[in-house]
Image: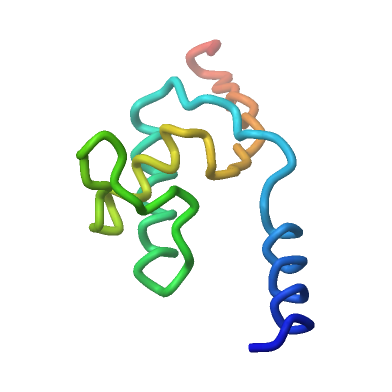
Length: 95
């Protein structure tokens, strides 16, 4: 690969990186949903967003599910929540 191809690849990667970290996930059910969707992306060939080199003699996770959970924990996965639905009013019960 020559330098022109390398710089194009770097420019592409910079565009894909989020400008700011994702909001922290405080709901464990939301955490599982986000991590599961990210693991699916990783299994289909997406590149991991965490550094894969060992730190302090602790190896980094290799399974897609563990990598996805660590990415969500480090706020590297962007997500959007759907708008809240309006409650349905039942005239019979008054609620």
